Length: 278
Image (cartoon, rainbow, N blue to C red; front, side, top):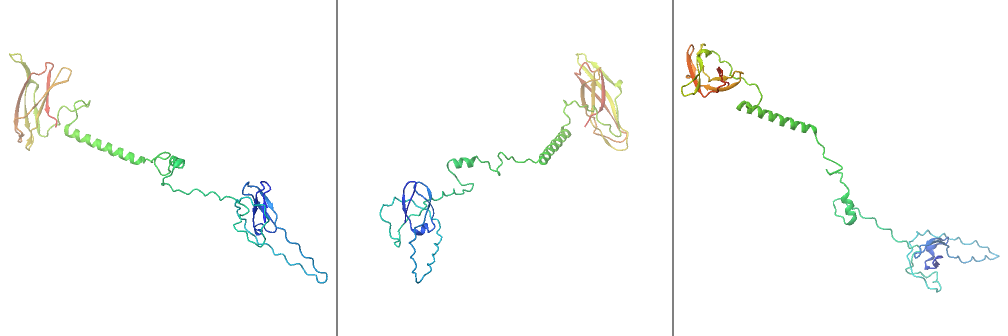
């Protein structure tokens, strides 16, 4: 059968089975207009004879035909339609809807993309990276442990340096002038045996005389002796070390020490004598 679009008058040649007896809705492939197309007209039924009425033959129901997608075709010529029993070759379907657009392929991350899609993908922050919006977490316990270990190492180093070299002179720390007393060693330097004199050439000197005695029952080593000169305000103005004549003393043994030093400060007024600190 031949159908024509009521909107643009485009005609199509379609088989009768595509429309069916009851008709169907079709769409023009040229102007996209849809309309209801009635089915082909059935031939008239023959009248039954008077003497022998015969029941009309049952009308076979047309099988349901799936809606084909019409394909645009050129306008049909205004010629006579082809016979019903002659098949129409390559007849376009009634509805020539275009194929749906294919969905874009899924491209996994890590594969190179092109154009604006690649720029949009690169601008998206990764949830697994350390750049913003995420930052690497810090462990406060590790930081405090590292700080405590560093402080302990520094304190141990300072203690070792002080034990080996002693405290520096610039530290405002009170230090003992003399060393601790030695067991069984008696140090005697009377004040009357300490004097300050001026030589004929004008040189000043300070002299001190005394004894070291071992009052114990064992042999004792004699450490160095320290002589300290102080001024009227009890400030240390001069010091010097004295090495005893003997390194050790037997029980009851004594040694005499006579020492003098020149070019002493004029502010020195008196002297203190004791064991040199270690």
